[in-house]
Image (cartoon, protein in one colour):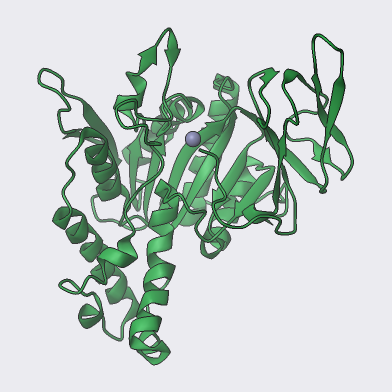
Length: 383
Ligand SMILES: [Zn+2]
């Protein structure tokens, strides 16, 4: 294992933060998998999974079974981890800018089609060569757009570590949740075996949810570049200069914020280790894949249940429960009048996440149910 330190831009004199990455296997070996934990710094289940996963990786490396390369970033957000305010850790948004740590990553398809740095003349008839060319161009594009703030330097380093990976796992969690995935449809075939191994209760698919999330810009780079080249150069050009979906990336929501337990993390790490064998990153007998614990559904089909008025929030259903249209998921109770309002689902699906607070403000997102049919359009994420 090699340990690399990536100093962030110092935001203020006298402070210096550093991102650390752990590298297993030979640099440049394929497949390359990049795994990071706790980009939202108050979402810690992934950090414990990374702790257990490094033991699997060290063992694979020591026994000569590591065929590919794994980059593990066990603590992806040293800025957010330091943001303790009034005894609460605030890890989702940077206090200096208000920006979400998991938004505003670069749109590589735009950078690779800039007028003064077009990728098109560098492409040829061989798909594998084109993949190598595009990955090199992504690194070069990052270098052409140097960061100017501490937060941007964090994003910049994470992108350099991930942009040439075949598979990227971004380990998050929700408030109170069943294990679920967010990914793009072109990545589904590659990632559904991991969803099966981890027992995901929802796999939510969207081609770009609108937030330029970490995982989305990595997989989106490939299909968006193909679309842009088809528009600018014609479909015949992309047929003659082919390249595949070069990266499958996913946000893995490892249940809820308080689900930081050895038994869960050890099982998740074992599932990821088995997936690395499935991918051929680690030599061995590929694991038998259990059946999926859910059918993938469109993210646009998710019903967001909201509180119609303020009051005490109490849930009648648990994360991971199958929900039928009409089921009461929660109630909001006015503590003075006693008015009790049921919050009902209108779709069939799985209640894959619910809130952690129990005082509902009007309009609060109370929970999400993975409906099968698109209901929503536009921006599909929460803040
Ligand atoms: Zn998150």
